[in-house]
Image (cartoon, rainbow, N blue to C red; front, side):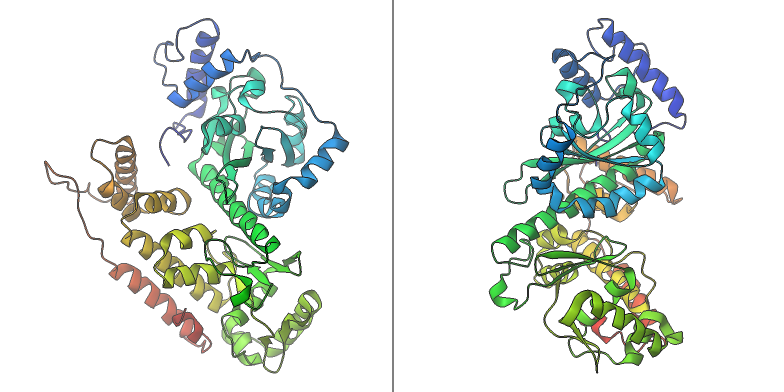
Length: 479
């Protein structure tokens, strides 16, 4: 995640907005470049976007057109590939947008707004600039903005306040990431979050990038299912060796999603926990074991019986009792990641890893499995000599991980801009953590082998904590 892609607000966002506004007005008045305003520090990607917007004759005081009527839009987006993943995007981005008084928007590959959802008051405000479903928000119609600039550059980007080309958008900040076809790599659309200055935080860019990767993984699953496959493309297995068309998604989600007989079934958190635990225990679990795994020492088997009855109404004959078990194989995104890790295929594991296992869960065995999977992923990333793997992990999950950034910097060419960005982030983190600057031998690049002891110690501590009073954690150690 380079500095150019981040809005990188200063301590006074109002001052930053005024400075960029002066550069923008100078540019509109005929300045030869966006950096001509005294003291201006306009990002190069923004300056280039302003140039593209001007060449497209975008009126900075006009709004983009609404080109598709409501009825035609409903038909179009129902048939669009992103309709298959809209619920996932709502789970990952929509809920955060609504809670944070922001908006979630999804476009097609041409910048047409397919969905605009979120805080009701913000939606009414957005209508005033035609940020509505059916409007075209590519750079050629809407000027510099996160969805349009994201499509123009082919990468995730933040646009802060007065960096927008059109005046009506300059009270907003947005972050957007492309969603790509898992086979061709071409963008099929964009996921965007739009709102106040707080959207300029690096976490907003990480959020939309993670959501885009999750959507891509789900698009791949849908395509494989249509061709008779149920395991994601990253895992490379077919229905012939799976014996099941059921699949559970529990990574990077607060709840669960069960794909069964061509349907996507939303599961509440407790039901997702039960299915995950049973999938990790092929021999089944007693009521006492499952209660302990879900609730700890205070677990009551009677509570498990109630939850299991409700779960059976939802998933049918996928589950059985005496002991509690799965009646057939249940694939999962968690299983895809652990298989790839066992095969030392970190590329496949990273593709399938959409985030922590049920991050809102407080079930002891789920917590232990979550921590162990994160340790395995991070250790594999650190052991990798792939700059691409380290960069993707740093962008999505390791923004505050000093060791990841220093490992990445050590592998990049000494004169590269990417290395300079990684070293800058390392220095920021060392300062935040109160650590001394890292010594760099003069005249030669950093070349270090990173120890795995800390990872192993953290995993062991997690397992010991989970095992204390919780005998049903044997499956964790075997994954």
